[in-house]
Length: 156
Image (tube, rainbow, N blue to C red; front, side):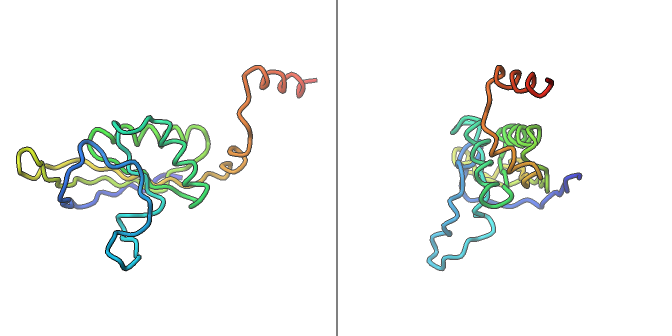
C-alpha cells in the first residue's frame, strides 16, 4: 500500500524554536479554557527535534502512541526532517508500521535575530499499526544465542 503524498500551502508561525519542534504534544488543549484540542495539537503527534532527544526516544514513543491510538503522526521542521524519516523507516523495516500519509510544506517562521520571516521545510508522516504490530510488541527481545537455539530446536 503506497502512502499518500500531499503538499500543503505555507503557513506562518509567530515564534521559532530552533531547528525542530518540542519533544511531543501532551494533547491537553491549547490553554484557551474551552478544553478543545486544535488540529495542530493532536494527542498522537510527535514533534521531533534533532537536538533535544536521542533517536530511539522517538522510536519508542511512536510505538507507545501506536499502541494507544492505532496511528502516530511524526512531524519535523528543517534539519530534523531527516530524523523523522529515519524514525519512520526504523518502524517500517521492523514490521511495526505502515505509511498512511506524508505531507510536505514550507512554514514561515519569524527569525528573532534578524526580525524577518524565513521559510522552513516541514514534513508530517502518519504511520499506522501494521497487522503484525501486536504480535511483534508482545514477543520479548531474545539474544542471538537464544534465537539460534530455538532455530535448532525447530529443525529437529
